[in-house]
Image (tube, rainbow, N blue to C red; front, side, top):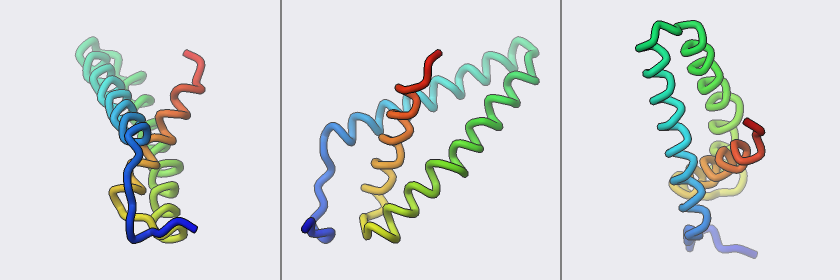
Length: 93
């Protein structure tokens, strides 16, 4: 059984979380560019999708990791971001 008091963050997990942050940064930069080019409808839809992903996926996943798995907030955040990166990897652009 894993001891929740001694938590180590896997380098792969940390790398996946950092990639997820870069994906979010790229999406936000694209929103800024779309607003600059007067494409407000598409920009608002991207922002709405990002908020929905945060509320429906990242937040519940992190809260589950914190309250049910008894992980630290930092580890739960890394796991949630890594799961977001895995979802974005599955998406076909």
